[in-house]
Structures are given as C-alpha cells and as structure tokens.
Image 1 (cartoon, rainbow, N blue to C red):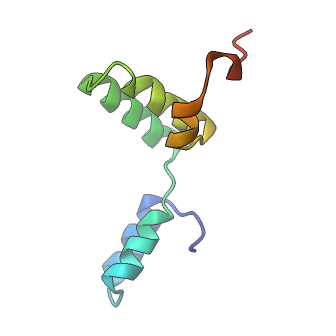
Image 2: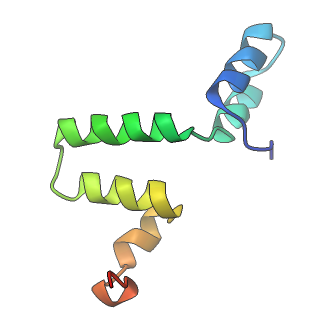
Image 3: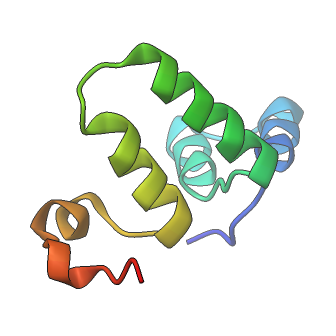
Length: 82
C-alpha cells in the first residue's frame, strides 16, 4: 500500500499521467484529509441531514479513526464523557 498522502499530492501524481486505473484507485485509497478539510466535510454532512445518525457517525470516525463496523457495534459504556 502507498503511504498516506494529501489530496494535492495524489492529484499531482495522477496529473503526471502514466498510471493505470488500478494504480490511480490505490493512490486515492491513501488520501488523508487536513484538519480544515475535515471541518468542511463535517459542515457539509451537517447541512445534508440525511439521517439523524449521519453527523455523529462522521464526527466519531473523523475524531477517532473508528471503522464503520466498530462505530455501529459501540455501546454507551464504550465512551467516557466525564
């Protein structure tokens, strides 16, 4: 797997050309978002209001790195809000 990279780094590599679609897809799988990009993503998700659980799940994933299956299996006792 490729090391984690910013979107800008991946866009530059793709723009240079010479990569197969599989290689391009692998590069995009290595993207991480900056703090500003995460804030914008969360703002966008909050505005969409797709479901009541969407925004909290996006916040949890972005702040902890938890996977979807981990988030969906979580229980109240898994969190210490104190």
